[in-house]
Length: 585
Image (tube, rainbow, N blue to C red):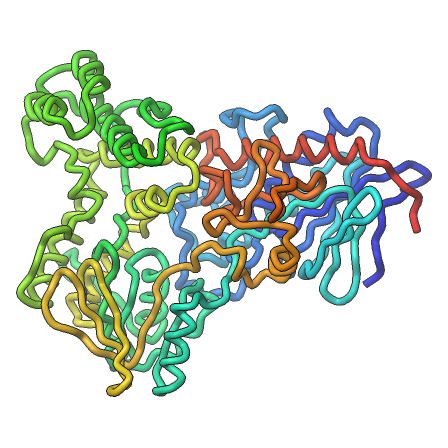
């Protein structure tokens, strides 16, 4: 591949920018560059180089070739196009949502390859709609190096080519990670004893074939990665689900393992809701601000979510309350979260115990519970799953959805915080209800056994097995296979991305709680010394300082991702139009 330099087009100077990563984040950056160019670029010419080894639009996570059994975790009411709800300086450029593109209901959960085709379509539409003075140039390659050159940046590509540009955006999205030290120890233990071990990773990137059929397997994690692996190890091995009298049953294919599943909470993520709010959305946050001290964050978040919950209950289901919202709201706002006054207010205002938000129990449903054996825990889990499925299907419980709206609003306010992100995933980012019904059927068929909360897995060198214990049941479970059913934790230091690895090794970037550090609000890359690079930018779910940018945007929801990509695009256009141009080499 030849070197591509900034230079001239028909005797006119040309600027250039490189967007590294062509998944949803990179696509949005390119779309916002094209949307803002007529205002900020004038007659200037701009080349936008978009580099990704995977299909542009789909990127790595949504690439083709994944099993249709793996679904997107977002329903089809998602979009990569801006609309008039987005509060940004650049003009909106509407386009079809996934549901509109498919002609499906917004609640449909598409297989990942189908979502990948939509994302590739969207990227193609963005590229084709670029203004005449913006040329979107595609490169199916991996960026392996980045260096300063006079007045710009040299982007080194796999295969030996290079680009010279005025500015670079790192938008690689979710990435792989080298094994953590604990995972490396597990891998070494497995190698010594001939055991099967799957470290953290995306289901499509792992080899579930190493998990033996018919044998016990310990599974650490009950979130979305668990749901994906569960599908591959059951339906993916010839099993099937049938319905009898409205109940889902599992018919084994004969090659399933026997899965013993535990996690920190001990329960899976809540299912997606299947209804709409009865009242208007609860609105923006009232008790949490970007300046809320870390020591007060949990209490402030709990109060914020309770406010959203009760707003819907009082306004959408007033017959189940003893006073109007106008009387309840000021008293709730003044009361301290969890204090005697607040508990008394809720008790006299909401007569049914089932209608009151029990936040601590919601967050950790198994805390303090102890069962005599796995069978007793299994019976409790069966009731828990049934109750969750019924509650998430019944619009009488729309206050649960209002709480999720409150979580979504907080994503634009709360900084990167592991506790909040875990809470968000557990309450708002769970699987489709049908997946939870499948999990219940698998438990009834004996394929899945729950171990409860606080699972701990130890290694027995003498016996050559793993042993698991939990806080929920006595005794241990041993197995010769262990699965880390979770996605890799964000880490720049152990990222498998060759560019980030090189930048980190040279001290040209740094991590903050595992995330790539950037200066806000302009998102310029921060070096280990604290220096800010004038021509390197980063945006994406593994980037610090970007609340609310992970996950897909919904139409009409003023998505934080679009606000951030719009601001970044305007900064890039300012940098490139001010750059000193030099003639083509």
